[in-house]
Amino acid sequence: GESVGLHLPTLSVQEGDNSIINCAYSNSASDYFIWYKQESGKGPQFIIDIRSNMDKRQGQRVTVLLNKTVKHLSLQIAATQPGDSAVYFCAETLNNDMRFGAGTRLTVKP
Amino acid sequence: NAGVMQNPRHLVRRRGQEARLRCSPMKGHSHVYWYRQLPEEGLKFMVYLQKENIIDESGMPKERFSAEFPKEGPSILRIQQVVRGDSAAYFCASSRQVSNQPQHFGDGTRLSIL
Image (cartoon, rainbow over all chains, first blue to last red; front, side, top):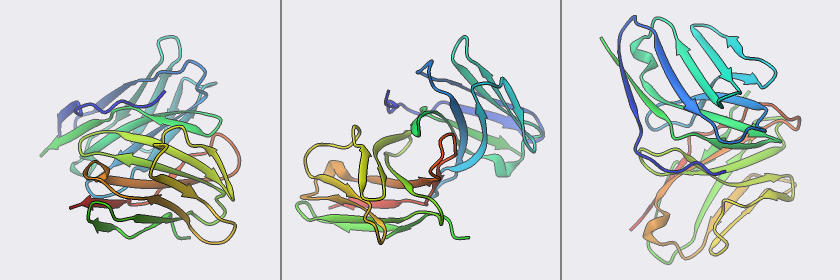
């Protein structure tokens, strides 16, 4: 289904702490999931992806967890830095048809 | 390897005029997607195209909006007789032909209607 426009939830963390951003997706048949980061005035930037046959994937300082039972996706950022401040979107995909979640604004306090 | 290129970055139109937004996908990408974003909101899917074909236009208004991705040249999102409510950021993304590949985004066109 379509993403619905909502006021962005926010998450504020201290520099150096770990961040966890959560996302509930809508279609239990979705088989591919992506996290994007969007900075002000720019387009979404790919961070990490995960296929539905996995439940965890790690990148550099980021980890994505997938729980298909409850249709939940999370993004963990280790040692959060000021440059991580942005809006983060999850996206679910089925057959190249991608739908975005509402997004979370992450603010990192120095 | 250039990324997805959108132009113009900013476009100002008066009510009733036409807006044309262009998108050149990444090299090797044959799938193009258009999204619309309002401030402080998520991206809303509009249309998905492959070369010379519209695959899914379920998110695009039936009137005034059209999209194309010709054999040669960029993809075009066209909005006729623009209204104030069309003001938004319009993002284009592209991906490879195989499934389960990430979409790569341009930096968008910000459309303002006076």
